[in-house]
Amino acid sequence: MQLSEITSLTLSDRIFEQLQTAIVKGEIPTGSKISEPELAKAYGVSRGTLREALSRLEERHLVVRSPNHGARVITLSYEELIDIYQVREALGGMACGLAAERMSDAEIADLKRLLDDHERSIREDEGLSYYQQEGELDFHYRILKGSRNRKILGVLEGGLYQLMRMYRYQFSTSSPRPLQALKEHRRIVEALEERDAELADLLMRRHIRSARKSIEERHRKSREQEE
Image 1 (cartoon, helix red, strand yellow):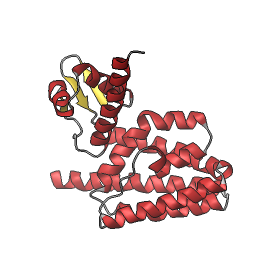
Image 2 (tube, rainbow, N blue to C red):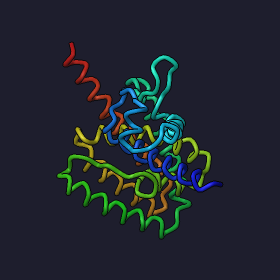
Image 3 (cartoon, rainbow, N blue to C red):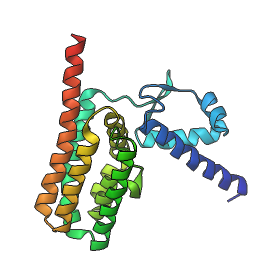
């Protein structure tokens, strides 16, 4: 591989990560049109490098392209969002039950320390949001990985994982869920420590279901205000 190819690959990875974070955090709003010239200029990269990053975002279902409208950030309908939460509830619960049986003691101890870091972050933000970084710094990702089930991880780590991160963050910034979500995470870790697969499965399903119901309630109130 030529040096120029290595540099291009590195730049593409960097731009991909930056754009993904911006979309997840809502800095690039859902439904907004993506201007390749403007983004290339803003990030100081070539159009070719930017297109590589956009292609990866499309694979993650964060960006959609159409022949007449170009690239846009994904916009999920309310119904699609609820569908995703229902799938996440079923597979997430299953993954958590498996994790109770398969995670090592050291992994569970690390998970507890991660939640301590999350609690500090929430309190620094005065309880207003609960943003979890991607991968190993994400509580749900750790449990998915701990399930040791590649099929579950493959489904949730792809498009569903990123979409859930996006809506988790954007809904957490304007709802009372952050501290409640942290409490639920701690209860789940207790079940993992006890190696109670049935309880871990139940608590994770209940945790995701609570988040879904919060979204449903906000949607209902929004509809009432519009009428």
